Image 1 (cartoon, rainbow, N blue to C red):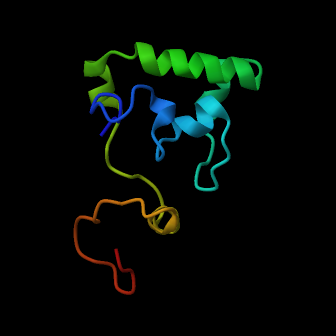
Image 2: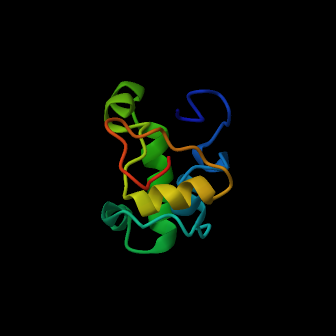
Length: 103
């Protein structure tokens, strides 16, 4: 759930588990692979950070609900890293369990 819409934080980069901390503040995070579209927000790091923040704050809530998924998407290795990193939760996998992989 979006921490701002849920009124947990006033700004997306304030939420401890948000990728916005990486994209807006430039805070290193070893589980984030930079989105290729991020470079389109500006010609330098400062421009990209400012424009990305504007993008998030101006995003229409209805549109955000349709575009942003609350499901974690990625490889099992990525999900495993995510679970280990500061106790972040990953939704349980749907479907038949894969032998040898605990979720």
